[in-house]
Image 1 (cartoon, helix red, strand yellow):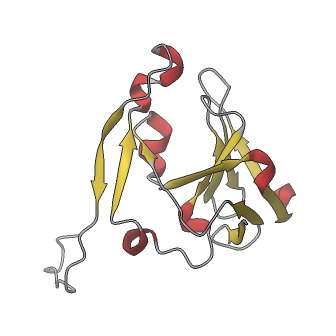
Image 2 (image 1 turned 30 degrees about the horizontal axis):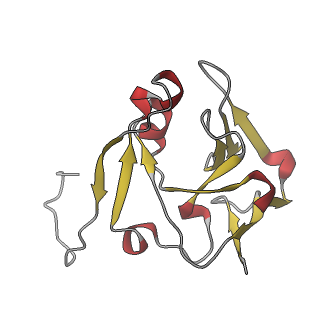
Amino acid sequence: MGVTRKGCCHCGAVQFSVEFPDERLVPSRCNCSICAMKGAAMVYVPVDAVTVTKGEDALSCYRFNTMAASHHFCSNCGIHVMHQARSDQDKFAINASTLEGVRPYEDFPEVPVFNGQRHVDDFGGERTQAGWLRFEATPDKVWPKGVI
């Protein structure tokens, strides 16, 4: 039995629901040029598991290079909400941070990073892992003024 989760962009103009197979979210990241810049942990679902409930007209789409992947973001606040990857056209990768109740650092302290610089479609279907992204919580640290 599936679990429905709601999601939205930062300003709330784009809202959606996602049907996940169960409670567990399995995030991943990628080191390709666009994913490295957006820095989001993504969770994959079948395309038909996603329903935009508000603001479809506020969604913009960005495509580049092969034009196969479609990256959807809110045209108002700029938050990347989901994309269809070049290698997985039958799935949406949902930005886990846009899902209600998800705390990406606390919920996903260790996330695999896949090697999008060596794209699976360009290397005979072989998907490789580039590394891990880890978050270690620390007590609040006071930084000297002007450092950051």
